[in-house]
Length: 585
Image (cartoon, rainbow, N blue to C red; front, side):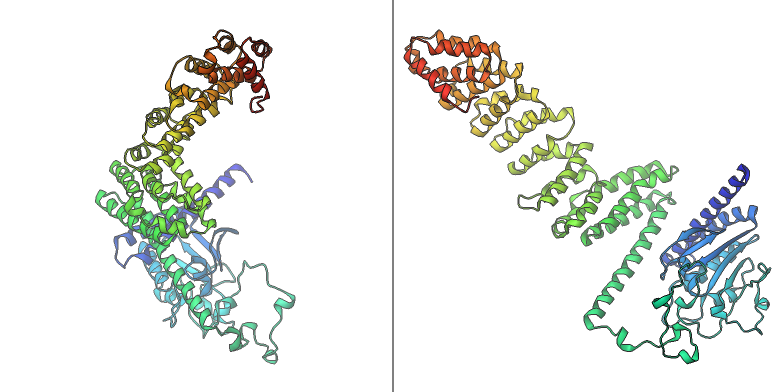
């Protein structure tokens, strides 16, 4: 195939897709709006433009119809489940196998065509006529169709050509309109695109009526085979009701999505967004997470899909997202989340991530200590993701929330990547609640080990857990900055250094984070003191010995051996005890 032919084929296919898209939108609008509504005329006008654009170059547009697809030039261009409410099945159900539009079609013909489709879209319990009869009565000269013989019979005396409208189709086919008796169930209509006809056991017929050579679909069904129990009837009714509501809601939402791209009046746009807000709240209350995600996606994409929308609409869209992310709209979230099964968490997370950071206060309020771990983890991840876009709502909560909640917020803050976070965490180091200070210390040290200089002043905090946290972090690294901080601290005379256990812990930390640079200071404690200092500064003697052992260098061992030969008996005993201490290796 040469390049020109390929381009022509591609152009034809794209033109058909355009026609099909506008045709489906027009059908949907007819199901949503009353006759004479402005939306209907606009939708039909769009079909007229797209169709004439195609027919101008190609003269005829013909679709072959299967029960679940539309075929153009041997290629399936649209498919949908074979059920009521889907376009291919509507035609197939009434026996139409080919649908053709020809050049010269008028907009009034299309209006009549869509009106007929709308009236016969859902098959009534007691239908008045059928789609084929209605099309025949309408006498639409530029819309032609071929009907299956199953519906029309095959009597030789019936001249279908006499019922043709406009030009005949290709030789061997006819435009057939009319009805002949009851055609039976839809499944009896042969699908020209159905490749699997079934053989063997699946193709066996009932023995009843075999002498009459009746088709299988006419065989009687035993009543017992289809009788439902009361509970089955109730369940079936609930399924049907749910599907009808779901289908109606989807059609309604699709119409609103389309209107977002067409409305240019700010007031009308605002009304549609207000409707979306109410619908979204209802979806949350019912736990329809996927539909809620679709709604948010469609509203968010409106500006991108239609760059010609007035700039005021963008501000209204932003306001909409702030509203749906606020507490009044999300109030029903807590109950639904607690009831949600584990397999729904992925869908819930997807929906929550489409909200704005304004949702953070509500989401934080949902987290409780006894909440399921998977649910709590999911909400925490969503809060982190939203706060990474804008952490100000999280920061504002720190000023008013109770201490236990602030503790959880600090943990989230610590995982965010923003230079301003450190400043907020530093302020929390002075919080009156020990658990909050503890979280702030943890968050700062997790962000950067160099933050030790910011938290080190809490080495004398009244909360023992905070002191152990800082010392425990220092023993993990041999860093000059850690060593310098501890050396300066141990050279001071602070009240906490009267606490024997605290002093020993600080000297041990110096030994694990320090180096040979600390040995002169430690050696001086052991060799330059008077024997009378032994009782007053026993903690420092023992601590210096433990630090030297932890440093572990040759120089440190020589210093220990030297101290072990001290003329002061107490120092010799302290060295011996330290060497037995297995906690310092």
